[in-house]
Length: 311
Ligand code: ACO
Image 1 (cartoon, rainbow, N blue to C red):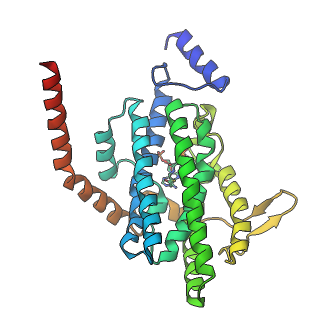
Image 2 (cartoon, rainbow, N blue to C red; image 1 turned 120 degrees about the horizontal axis):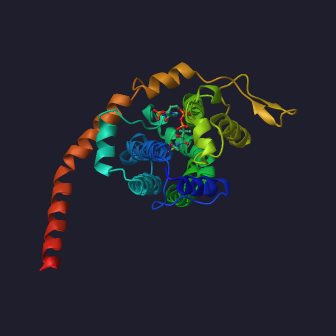
Image 3 (cartoon, helix red, strand yellow; image 1 turned 180 degrees about the vertical axis):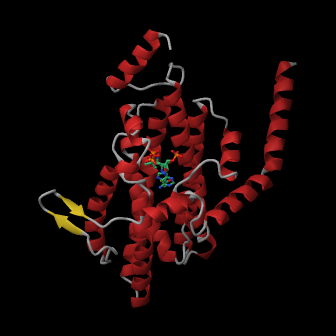
């Protein structure tokens, strides 16, 4: 690249200013952002499925309305993020193709089944809690459109997390059977939630580069630790046990020590071999195919409008 452009880019990053779509940026920076933002967008859209399955089976009108709003928010998050990817020159239709052909990733967490209504609460508490830990620092990501999308997304994620925790509090005040449902959901979602933060730092090929570019602000292990420290007191208050015999407060470190997630399981799920991968992609593919007529109609309408305006 011409030297002044590279220098301007480096200085922008060094001074914690934002890179904007019109600015020159290195190819690697652009590619890394498209990769991360697309994966993030896909996660939001695929993430509608596990909870969406409970909308028709919610136990009350109030819970149904809340869940509806939440799942709709996830669709909105996906749309902000696809728009952020478009500012980098990515094409949204192409990103969707890549997702349904299995050429682009989405978060491992959405490949686990939701077996009871307590799972809705635990997803809010753990999965949205983990998303907040991971995404609040992304509000300071060096790429402007991504950072700004994160601000709004994080506000909505906070609401999601609170609704999950409130749902669980309600169930814990209920019957013995309801408390057992909550504990069972906690047992199933704890380890996959820790895996959301990605592989350990010494096995994370992208971290060093992304942190130097200030796309990522903290390493995978730092954020995982932050999540554990945040969640332990919440579990005590709720009255559930986190399924990790090695979990204890380490006064010296000022953090909680915890056991090692099954990294082989994470690798398997990322590669497409988790409990629900095939089902999630199949559902996304059929929704896309069934929506073809809407896209055709919208395109025809836009062409007609443009022709009219040109007259
Ligand atoms: N699920 C699926 N893939 C993952 C996961 C995961 N939990 N963790 C890591 N990976 C993938 C990475 O995308 C990367 O694959 P790629 O190089 O083919 O793109 C590979 O495993 C190696 O991991 P890292 O080098 O650690 O990758 P990276 O630096 O991108 O860090 C992380 C991964 C932490 C997920 C990062 O991309 C990120 O912060 N993304 C934004 C947040 C996000 O996408 N959240 C989605 C779930 S939250 C929600 O939607 C509610």
